[in-house]
Amino acid sequence: MSHTPSKKRQREQMQRDRRTQKEAQRLKRKTEGPRLEGQDAPDLADMVAGPQPPREDGTH
Image 1 (tube, rainbow, N blue to C red):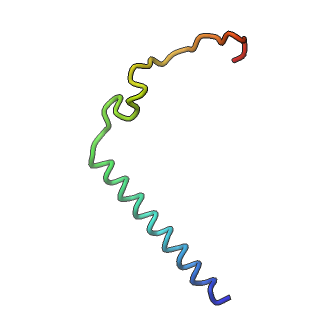
Image 2 (image 1 turned 120 degrees about the vertical axis):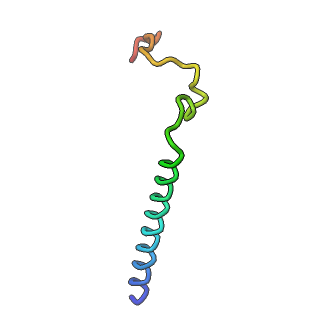
Image 3 (image 1 turned 180 degrees about the vertical axis):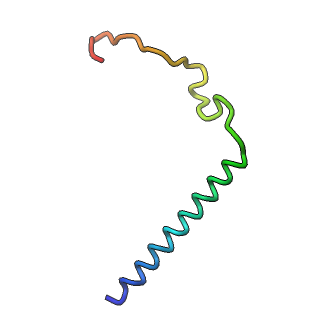
């Protein structure tokens, strides 16, 4: 069972790395500023939100 502590250390190191990467991404997004409207989904740019017409088969 001598490999168990090394696996734990490796897993903990991966978690720390992941945490630092996420924090770096958060800071990067924060410095970029707010996204403009429609910039995140260009394929939905012409769609209008609202109630949908009922389906022909009567189901919801």
